[in-house]
Image (cartoon, rainbow, N blue to C red; front, side, top):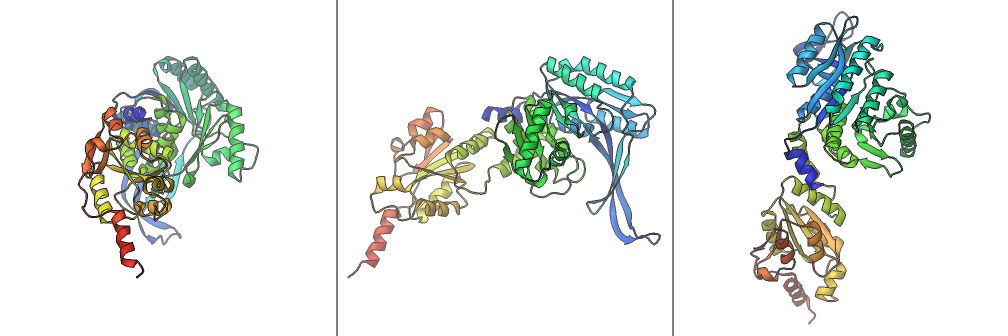
Amino acid sequence: MKSKFKYFFDSKERPKVLVVGDLILDEYLWGGVTRISPEAPVPVLETKSENLSLGGAANVANNLAALGCEVTLIGAIGQDEKGDRLLELIKERGIHTEGIFRFVHRPTTSKMRIIAHNQQILRIDKEDNRPITEETEKKIIKFTDQILPEMDGVIVSDYQKGVLTEKVIKNLVHRAQKAKKKVIVDPKSADFSLYKGATVLTPNQKEVERSVPIKVNSLEDLERAAEYLLSLTRADALLVTRGKDGMTLYKNKEKPTAIPTEAKEVFDVTGAGDTVVSVFGMAVFVGFDFEEAAWLSNMAASIVVGKVGTAAVTLNEINEFLQEEMFRTSHTLLRLEELKKLVSLAKSTGKTVVFTNGCFDIIHGGHIEFLQKAKAKGDLLVVGLNSDASVRAIKGDGRPIKTQKERADILSALRYVDYITIFDETTPKQLISEIRPDILVKGNDYAIDEVVGREIVEGYGARVELIPIVKGLSTTKTVEKILENHKLD
């Protein structure tokens, strides 16, 4: 996973992606409401600004372009002013437009959103949802056949505006399968058999509910619905977006993977599905497995819903979000497997991981100062905490004074400590081998060659550092002083 993250964020190489679907011009009218019209009981919007953005499949292409991908877009627009403006916007993003064809007898699909005080109060749609003509259909199929061999993957963005006819989709999937290209579909049709042969589908929960012959009232129902759709479409996976409940990845004959939402604050969900399919598709096309790709797309969706209007997410934004949020868990005490994943993620994004260990039986000022100095050595401080059994083996039957849970709870409350894991061995050698920290720290009451694990970390190129300790402070001395002060006469 480490090498994949490094590639994703650092490599200049990006996949060539073919996006096929319904192109939409999103128009935004911004203003404020301070009064009601005297003509009718409706609010009066005082216009402050207007702007245009890419919607539908064009927004998927826009997201991919923002991620650095080379994107070719296939679709159709009207021979009208809105079509001209949409085409101009697409070209400005550096997206290839040779596959965009013009309608003669139907308008460009557009959605005007009226926004007052950052809240959408009205949407006005202009569209013709009839299937495209056979002539346009043939043009799209011919161009698809020409360009597809050059692509690394295909994303189908279906908004049910008439472009993705059964013939267009079947030809696209057939050609992609022959060329061994993955096809990711964001579906809108209630008939999922239309997408048979796609690699992954990314519907939202409502789209799943209306496409299956059962009622979906629980997670168990949703799982059965997913199984039905996987069987129907012969897809490898189904990624269901579930709003505030995050998303769930379903794969054939495997346990579902639930991915909770990470959004801090939701301003506008417009285009969130486009962001999900874009980031998921890109990640799959560069070699991520479905779970990793879903996890990244969930991060991207969490960013985009914090923006107002149709918006794209960049790799820098995803990277920053990861660095700010993903190293924070709801708890500091982790199992080793959880810790290893977070350490791997931290190192893959350039963070320095510091490790120390100890019993930490009765926390005193010396411990606090030591942990503060240890954290200053890097970005994340991981503490290996001896279990109760381990402490007894080292210190004797009278120890520990506090249980491992109490000791872990106290350490968790310290802002210098990022993660804690408990180990049963008398030394942390196995733990160090598993998590492979960048820096191993101990107090300077040890000599370098006495530090347990030194040969392990130096063996893979990391280092050991000694930190000055506060003299005269130790748990043993604290216990002795308590006993001395409270002994019976």
